[in-house]
Amino acid sequence: MSGKPRISYFYDNDIGNFSYSPGHPMKPHRVRMTHNLILNYDLYKDMQIQRPTLLLPDEMKAYHSEDYVDFLRTVTPENAAHYKTHLTRFNIGTDCPVFDGVFRYCQISAGGSVAGAVKLNQGDADIAINWSGGLHHAKKSEASGFCYVNDIVLGILELLKHHPRVMYIDVDVHHGDGVEEAFYLTDRVMTISFHKYGEFFPGTGSIKDIGAGFGKYYSVNFPLRDGMDDISFQFIFQPIVARAIDVYRPTAIVLQLGADSLTQDRLGCFNLTLKGHGECVEFVKSFNIPLLLLGGGGYTVRNVARCWTYETALALGKELPDELPYNDFFPYFAPTHRLHLLPAPVENLNSVEYLQQHATRILDTLSRIEGAPSVVMNNIPPDSYSVDLERLLDDLDTDTMTYRGSRNSKLWAGIEVEDELPMTRPSVSMQSSLQTITASTPIGAGFLSNDPLFTFLHQPSMVGVENRSPLLTHKIQQFTRRILSSANPGYMDPLEMKDKINQISEMERDSFQLAHEKMHSIPNTQRLLSDHHQDMEEEDQMMVDLEAPTSIRDFGKKESFNQTHAPGEDRERITQRMIDRQMNDPSEFDMGARNADVTSGSPTIQTPEIVADTPDATKVIAPSGELHLPDGKVMRTES
Image 1 (tube, rainbow, N blue to C red):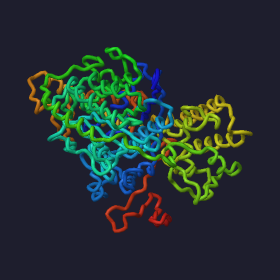
Image 2: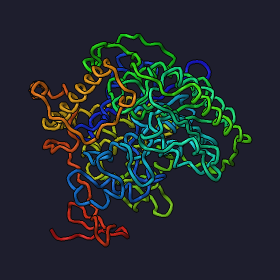
Image 3: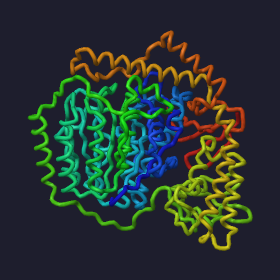
Image 4: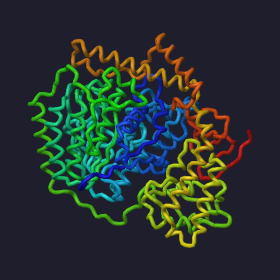
């Protein structure tokens, strides 16, 4: 990583539209706040900003079990009552509720991490950033700790296609149990976690947990106590990480930067400032190894935005002024409107003797690794989000716009395609192929880096093959015909192609502008605004409490996740005023309901329902009255 680092930054604006439940500490809205602060600090000018492709269900199944992924695709708040057995089996409940758009939320989060890994694999970036990711608690067949799909494991699996050894470092206040569990028996991945240990979620991460089988000595856990400060954290972080890199020699590093280890976090109990937290980024970056930066925990949303903005600047090698620039969420950062935080007046229960004792033990364990493990890299699997353009062109009939893929020979994104699928309603394979054309496609094939086609195919109104708009289908056909009509598609003018694709993108966006505004329903906006006001009140109260003498045992004590507070009279008045403002100008707020009943041109997505708690739970009944049998056949049923 010589000179100025190349940064690929992944963000999808839809991430801020999701809400777990009223009073839930996990707020996806924090990522939107982070992005807005990054924009107003002008950091975007030095990064390659991309919208990640939604991760396909089959790609999630590279780690997660098939029945778990299928359940997440099907369950909704409306039909959740029919899946009592499944909810228990997959650990869905208070911590991990069923909310509107939960599967799409997982697709965005995991899609960014996998796309970042692809960028590193292809050598197109030195550092990739996905603040929507870092959900390290999700297991193979169950949700856990606000996490449904483990984007970290999926990203590491992608890196392992090209890298013989990957190191994972976790500075979240909670133990990265889901990632450790996935790679506990292998030496291809070394996991290192610095976390609170004891009577604290998830209760794992003892210093004795060092891996097993081929993975023995490749799991490192440093259990910490309350009140960890900047000096103490770097006292153990730097020597352990440096020693681990020296003996393991990773060719790629994944750094999970959970912001719940910051001071004043709603659920955390550490006392790190932004500088202490960010020092981890600077230290790991100094080794000049391909680096994937991910988000994670963090439940005081204004501090999360501060932290990840600051660490984005560190990745770029830039210094930020302490005074925050004006941004869309400026009131959240009151009263200081400053970037950096002051540590809370709490005791650090991690004594020097305690830290030295555990650091010595961990360094001794690392010394037992006899050289970096080697691996034979043969037949490297294809990257996710890539497609052979020549195969795509060969399998398109230019006259009938029919895809001529063979069931036996053509596989796109792991999904078999039917013979003679008409392009008037794009097949799953065609959708995947067009969505996955990225900068990995050679310039000679007529595509530029940051391909606009990558973006405009992912408008919110275009979810689902059966619900694509006629305009979009028509434009896809026109686009494909342009490529096929060229005398030599391999040598099309890249600038001309970019202009044409941008024109398509603008037309498609304009056609859905009205529908997008309609989706900002007042009831959903009221719920989200009430939720955000409640957060601000709770955080303000917490700041008042910190000024009084505080027992370290009570600081950061975990509250019940299902605890709700009735809104006060003042907040009701504020919420009503904001709703009135939205009725006058719907574009002022971007918190629309994802599944609203849109009566304009936007299609309504119909999700098939799995027949739950029946002897034959593999049948799927679609709303149209079709019965999908396990062997893939479709039988029509009478209404």
